[in-house]
Amino acid sequence: MNATLSKTPSALEEQFARRLANRLSAGNAELPHDIGERLRVARQQAVARRKLAPALHPTEVLVSSGGAAALGGGWWTRIGAVVPLIALVIGMITISIVQDENRANDMAEVDAALLTDDLPPAAFTDPGFAQFLKTHASDTASH
Image 1 (cartoon, rainbow, N blue to C red):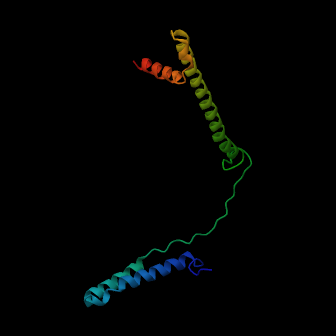
Image 2 (tube, rainbow, N blue to C red; image 1 turned 120 degrees about the vertical axis):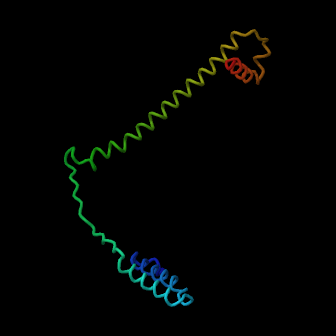
């Protein structure tokens, strides 16, 4: 097992802090003595003032599921899980109905155009005739 994965978060933080401190201290040799001393004192003050994070302790949570006052579970959870599913089903059914109506309206327009227009019998056997009627009907509707 990898040794890095088995370390605790506090050990990893300590390791990071040491690497950071070493990196910051690497250039101290080239600095003048007075600047190096001021940096050392500033580091000591920063370490003294640092705030320790409060330790997190697990606490017990008591949830009462008896009655309507317990909104954290029970039948509210069931309703919350079912409502989106019902909304999805209703939406899908509505889309299906609207698409069926649109298809029926398109076919009715083509049928009406065929029945009201004077056409030679050969026009009915032409495979591109239905497409022509659709484009012609949409052109006249837009004007």
